[in-house]
Length: 203
Image 1 (cartoon, rainbow, N blue to C red):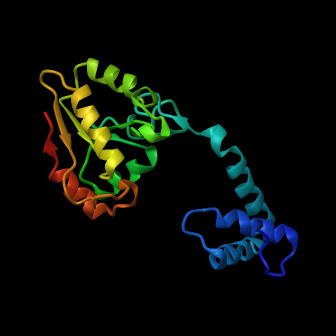
Image 2: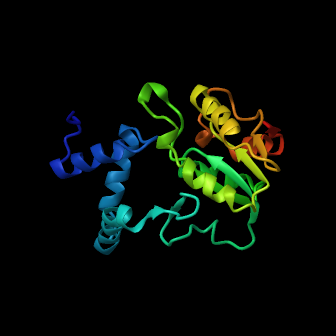
């Protein structure tokens, strides 16, 4: 839909593109586009290069599925992390939210989604085989299920609690603190910290 702003076509196209970003409205997109016009040409070229090569330079971490530009992500490559703890999340975007709370020093496992039968998304579409392989190594003592607290997130946690059970393994679920029905990716660090400290055992 054309924007009735009276700007030249290239600028209107940029504004429309910026409006597609989450949290960016029409006025903010307009201000950002006009601000970019003030950038030196070299900075604009660098920004364009970063955007055009973004997907090619990033890939899933070979161990946990987090975003990485090397075989292992920064978290998996950190020798100071507690390798006996694995926090299971739906997407890589949820990892920085947990990291900002500063309460978890273990590793992560990205499922790549959650169970959604209405969208024909079952267990076979999630990165469960990779998680089982990590557990088979025998070093993990606890798996923390940090899926969102909406219906699909709870269903995914319940399925994982049964699917991952094995002798000697603690399976816990983050507790209250994350609002019911909310996406964990939008929770603030203090809320995540409370939820992690008050996680409950599922088996």
